[in-house]
Length: 454
Image 1 (tube, one colour):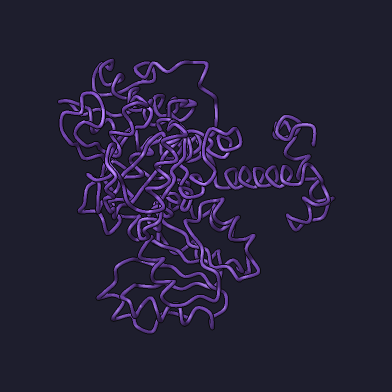
Image 2 (cartoon, one colour):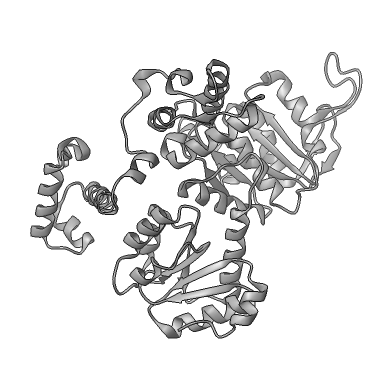
């Protein structure tokens, strides 16, 4: 089956879309809706046929493929089409497949049946993610999923809580939410709650009137007022004192602010984004953060994973910083430098990577940055499989590694229980034993990988 509106699709096509759906009756309305909206659509009924279709920009794939599981399909497609985006289509009773698909690289999923508008809205959000965004490099599927959620959050008025280790780029993500929202032309202000003395933070945020305290020789608007109609980022919100948390909670609830020393309420139309490197749930349990404030902020949570968990981003971000900071002669990363960057632990995340690249550009001799120029601590470099190494492996070897990793994940999920693991994998316990034996022969230490459960 192919689309019946080829002429329109070729003239008005916005994005190359591949639909993989074994049931022709399910495929027909999807193709109709996409082509009606100007998209060019290719159609396949099996996973293996779809993997021969070149490099589609967006792939819609059913979780009910007749010849392979959706996990294997996504893994295979991601390896041959790193720039493509995959959206899983799952039935209402297949929620577990949606989770598995997202885990291995799907950007999002649709629950079947779905309305035409849901499909088109999702496609447009994914298209927006494919457009270059200033200061954001997102090549890994984890990063793309975060941006997908951020794009959704941008279309609402709800508060956003961004979490992540120091240096992961929380302020950059906050700016992305602002720039993708209807407030993009309005102010964006960032306030680091940890960098301002507690005695001054209230006046900085709320403003003050003349004579409110010693040295207040004139009235001053606060950051909330200055960001009115726009967005304010409160970075390191976990450092805010309990007394100031109570006053901030009122701002969230009432959408109004009173300057220090005044009782006049000033109405606010403002988007509030908070960011922290702390676990606010733990802070609530320890009595250091108000529970009611936490739930007010945690309406749309976004978590930036550490750089070591999104390794596909390391080399593109490195190149971004090289382009940003190189002066005069252009330079490149050597092979050993790329391997070292991918194997390093990056405790300081993107902020540390930026500093390392700046230093390497100073230390280099000629047009190539070498591993020695990076000056990375040896004790934080761990030999791991990198994107460079995976490209040098054969297709069979890469697939085998992915399969072994999946088995380990299931074993951990069921605390090493072989019967439950075999059922989840859809194999017999005997077949699972053979797989585990093969893994041991490949040098995989199951005892270390799974702990006492193995």
